[in-house]
Image 1: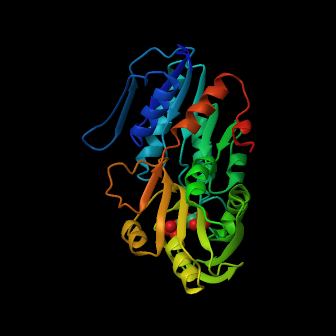
Image 2: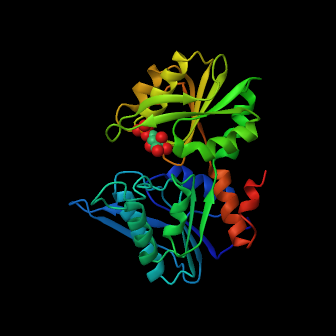
Length: 314
Ligand code: R5P
């Protein structure tokens, strides 16, 4: 992108390396922004440049702590009050996406609440990646550009792919993504019938599909505690599969996830940098691929009024 004075990239504190990489690729300097905490923990944000009439892209994943969400809302609101022309919330990882329906009585549909908050704050558009459920787009009354991480994993996995590979969806929720991925990889598809007896605990009930003697790619949208992938990997090994690789866009990696995945029979865990894990001690088992190119291209296309879906055509 030529250095267009009307485009500003603002980066919150949740994932500065990704924000900087996107700004670099677009050849636009990061907007001078001050973000700090008061002594009681409250957040202060100030945009130290004139952004009147600008198209502002605010980069911030909304993984915990919840301060990340509040910071994003405050940056949007500050941009609106500064007379920005268009405000796009670029949310590489959309947190609380699993709270997307009333699956039991008297619960909050937090994914919807956050959509409302983003719109009330002043966002005109959202760019995000690998939503836990694509229909979350419908929670917004503004355009949502939903990007896919698969193009990121294709190259890496093609290099390690073997003749008789099978893509395994670790639960029914990920079937659509896994099926599309299996098509690109020219691999078979299998599905794990997973139950959650309690929150954050996964249990494999059944494996649907042929995995015996075949190398496996477990494809999920996110890795939180690692329970889903590890339980799936042990069950697949018990069923006599070959090497296991796992990939997911979002490495939340909470609780015991790192130790659990390290001990598991998974050969490589391939994630993207939608969430900043650069300061964590990831073992050699982890491969982190950057999605900066995908976000930069999407922003470039939006600025040029070009199609974003064409990026994922093949
Ligand atoms: C669930 O529906 C998601 O697609 C993931 O499989 C899940 O959130 C991963 O969580 P965990 O790593 O804690 O099992």
